[in-house]
Image (tube, rainbow, N blue to C red):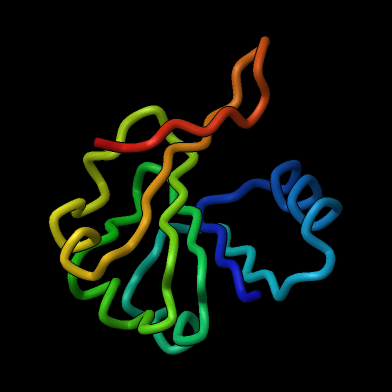
Length: 107
């Protein structure tokens, strides 16, 4: 499976690389931008952070996308209406001191 992580630091890159070694990973330092869209075509999962705008334009670049898994506590950077229109799942994964990488469905 092809998975893209945006705005991911060196610690995060190592964390996901160790746990998702059987998948094709795109580990991108900065936010999701149109300059990356060609590389995202086969992604089934994306994991953005707060500066990645996941809007209709970005979603259109990823016809294979099945899941948007943000790593932030908020989700105002994700167009939930566009995700729903595409039938995409969207989740919020965040780490806390007590429950690392807890998953919460977005409304």
